[in-house]
Every structure is written in C-alpha cells, then in structure tokens.
Length: 350
Ligand code: SAH
Image 1 (tube, rainbow, N blue to C red):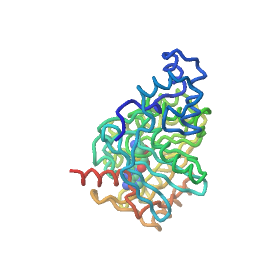
Image 2 (cartoon, protein in one colour):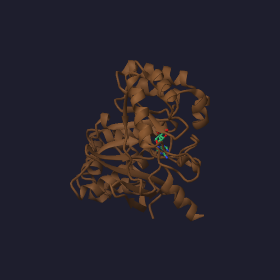
Image 3 (cartoon, rainbow, N blue to C red):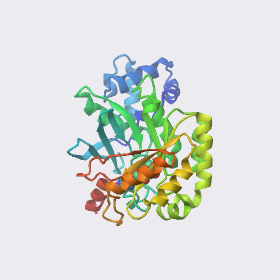
Image 4 (cartoon, rainbow, N blue to C red):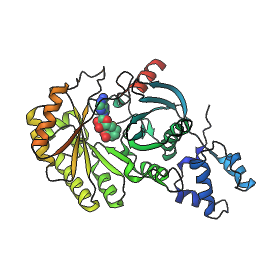
C-alpha cells in the first residue's frame, strides 16, 4: 500500500527551492534533495544524510517518494516491457519501456484514462478519471530507472505518448519535463524528450511561446478534416487549417523540426490519394511523417495496413517531397496497444 501523501517528485527544482524556503532552508538544499532523489535514487528521506535531521523529519511527515507500485509487467520477445502501475488512490496506469539500438525509451502516461475519444485507440475505452501529477509521471521514469540501475543502464529517451492527452494536462506535463530534464537530476536532454498531442491548438501556441527545447509530435492520422473528424473528435474543435497554422508558427519561432504521426489503417487512410493529400499538407514545413503500424484492438474493427501497402504509401509521400519513416512494430506479442493492458485489467476487476 502506498501512502496518500503528496510525492516529492512533484517538485520542479524551482518549486523545491520555494517549498524548502518555507522550511527555513537555503536554496542549495533543493540541489542536495535532487541529488538524493535523482542521482543516488534513494527511496527514503532518512537516507539523505547531509540534510538536517529536523528537515528530514518534516519532509517524511509531509511527503512520500515513490508514487507507483507495480501490479503487472509483461515482457515481449523483443524485450519491450509494459508496466501496469497502481497509484495512491487505486487508479491504474500503463508505462512502456522500449529497447532500441539508440537506447532505452520510456513511454509515460499523462492521465488516468483519456477523453479525446479517438476511434482507433484503446486508451479511450476508459474515460478520463483524472490528470496525473508531475510526480506521478516522474515516478513512472524513476521506477524503471531503478530497475535499469541493476544493469548499469539508463533511461535515454522519454516520450509522453502513453494514455492521456498531455496538452489536456499542460502545466503538470511541463513540470514533469522540467524535473527529468534538470541538470541536477536525471539530466535527460530536452532533445531526448518528446511530447505528443492530438492537436490542442491553444496549448500548441502556449508551448511555442514557452520556447521549450522538447520535441513536439502531432498525431495527424488523416490528411483532411472529413476523415480526421471521423477518427479524432478533436478535429471538430480545432480543424486542420487552425492546427497547421499553429504548427507553422511554432516551427518558425522555434526552428524545431516537427514529427507528424500517422497510423496506417487498412482501407481507411492508406490510399495513394491520402498519401498525396498528406504530402500536400506538409510539404515546405520543417517536418517529417512517422508512419506507424497499427496495433489492432479487438473492440473497434480497425485493421493494420499490410507491409506492401505501407511501403507504397511511404513511397508516394517521399516522391511528393515529404520525408517519412516507416516504423517497425514492437511488442506485438503482449498487450502493447495504448491502454490495452489497463483496459483488460480494469475489466477483470469488475
Ligand atoms: N494523446 C496524445 C498522446 C497519446 S497517444 C496523442 O494523441 O498524440 C500516442 C500515439 O499513439 C498517438 O499517435 C496515437 O494516435 C497512437 N495510437 C493510439 N492507439 C494506437 C494503436 N492501437 N496502434 C498504434 N498507435 C496508436
């Protein structure tokens, strides 16, 4: 059973300094705290031997450290690992560890369930219960980092692509990124952190104004409003012209390359005409398209585009002047689709 106290992982360095000032401490204490939490990775305040005893007492009575406990873990043949975690209020979330030749990537959830209602996605099978705090996202990384410590490995890359819409939980996601990015903590480079959004335009604009160095990925999945609206309800609130305008402003202001994610759905969005429209939409932007094989979900009937058709789609995009990558499948012998493991667990609970 985990305590229901607030986790100390919630605090960005700036907020930790403020909190510790409230305990009469100088600002260097926040750096000491960060070093214990994220460098030595201790799980109790008692071990923080260079902090004053009284402060250790105060912190222990107000805060917990690790906010997640493991309920289930599945490991695929390609070593992709899926974790089902329980939070202090009993809510469950999924996190995925992917082993690439360029390092270990962790995919974190940003909400408990999701309200975006994308037709193909298993996460939306369970409506949003609540936002995750920054610390609950940090906890997903720290749990896995502690496991990797045993093998002398580290979390190299982080993608906010698990359950939830990060830009529907903007402030906590930005705090989360700041914690894992901090030079005094895990020090995961901003260019190794990617936030993926289904297209919440006002938050894309806020993100652009923040001039953050994190990568931005956009779940596009359709090259026109007619189709996109069927697949992704967010398109009704923010149609493609508004989305593309915000993205052009972002990439011009920030000189950053954008990633467009495009799941290939058989007979739905994978025709030559779709590929041409997609290229027309993106050509000229500092961006590329990441074509993603669809992980089939029993509940909705969408099928994956077969490999030959996927290659053809890729060719049409490239010939029309837009860069693309065709991603290979990972972990398809486990419940790897977003929200699948959790959905199955919650069904079994009822
Ligand atoms: N809400 C955010 C982040 C979470 S979804 C977003 O929409 O970007 C992360 C990515 O996984 C999105 O591109 C989403 O469309 C995709 N996805 C969802 N279900 C999938 C499935 N069954 N197979 C492959 N990709 C999926």
